[in-house]
Length: 197
Image 1 (cartoon, rainbow, N blue to C red):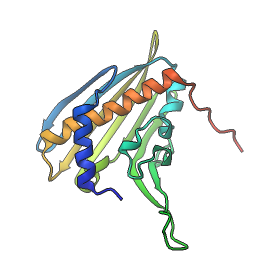
Image 2: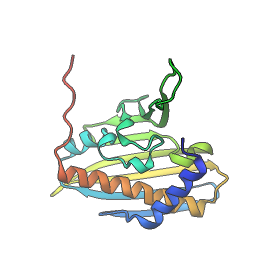
Image 3: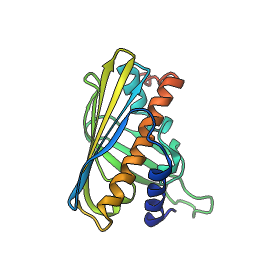
């Protein structure tokens, strides 16, 4: 199991060495009370296909930014009250009958595929151990060449870490995920919804 201090160091390192990719990323506000990050990226896919991929984070989120070190354990139930969560598989030496673990990264407040709007609340990574509240809004905007994905993450509350260090780290980490989402949409067809029944 990765310790939160180790995860924080990994997030900082990622912010320093991984470019945000195509689009625009910026810490637009910052104080001792919190920060706001805004990012955007362009995807060569329709808003409908972009939404389908957006709600399948196991296909594009980096395994480096998961608790289990495996993005295939991520899932997102894209309806109000739903969960952007992660399964924590049992280790090979787990006692008989031990259940798997789980992590809630965020929970869904607003999901509207027709308008291309997903809003979730939660503190990601090392922010989870602080008295913080984070609200992420993702908006899909149709363009001439596909879809512009706009992401805003507003974080506020009390934290023991320095805001001027963690805000750029969060910006870099989210920029990596957004660039990965745009790249996957360009390289592969989006997942199809499961058949009813």
